[in-house]
Amino acid sequence: MKHIFNAGPCVLPQQAIDNAIEALRNFKGTGVSLISISHRTKEWEETMDETRALWKELLNIPDDYETVFLGGGASLQFLYVAMNFLEKKAAYLDTGVWAHKALKEAAGLGEAYALASSADKNYSYIPKGYIIPRDVDYFHITTNNTIYGTEIKHDIDSPVPLIADMSSDILSRRVDVKKYAMIYGGAQKNAGPAGVAFAIIRKDALGKVSRYIPTMLDYRTHIDKGSMFNTPPVFSIFVMNETLKWLKGIGGIDAIHEIDEKKAATLYGEIDRNSIFKGTAAVEDRSIMNVPFVMAPGYEELAPKFLEFAKERDLVGLKGHRSVGGFRASLYNACTQEDVDALVKAMQEFEKENK
Ligand SMILES: Cc1ncc(COP(=O)(O)O)c(C=O)c1O
Image: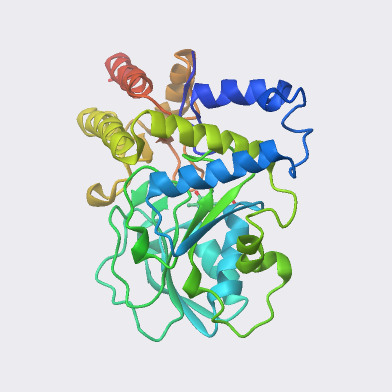
């Protein structure tokens, strides 16, 4: 059995994968594959409705919010956000490559700027002490910075509409949705496979911009049609549905949060104890989802050897992002404590052999 630490696409619950395989053969007993059915069938519409209902229940989304499931990934949401919310000016918290890309899309449509940035230390911390201005249309944050392993772990208060990219920490902690005008992300970490993005939008936050919004880029189009204005990514939504069912089955967000915190504490504990590895993110901002680490000074040349050592022990997906180097273990919801224990054991053995 492989221990999968990929950053996304990533490990998903086995139950979701098994049920997807069965649905590919025979969707809900129709005798037709999930990827051959019409999305206008009763069976599919039930799946769509159930997915939305599970999503709303697990995340405790208030009634004045709508969720849409769309193609194009989180990267297209960067543009959607600006199209639908930016009239004149928007402030962004620059916490990494993804935050920066989101800002860049908005800068093409209006005045968008970084209110604060942690670029000075390669995004290894979350900027603090900034004051959110009142003269912007919205303030945009990236709650979990997948590459750098930093996370905003609480819901911030904002005097202007708050918009959050939660691609890599959605469903890992309880979020007070009311504090946000919008939350969005790609599904391919905690929510399901690649191919579908989600956007949770407070209905009254829409309709405030004067520009023409192309039909497909207007959230209202997709809200009005229940995410079926055009052909939805049925396979991805099906696996998302199964992933949400699995999460509900193990007790929902509070239960998984406890598990996620324990996994992260185990790995950070080892990183801090082990004399030949070290963490890269500021301790107070450490993400519970993505854990980047490197070889400690003096041991740098051992990095390729550790990756090989890990591979021999069935530990997969540990190579760090090129902008941080070293290693990154992504501990998404379907990653287990046993997976983390196997990684910690390998780090301990590697230390013994190489110190
Ligand atoms: C925080 C964050 N935002 C946005 C993206 C981009 O997502 P996508 O590949 O779905 O466009 C990623 C991808 O990893 C991410 O981690």
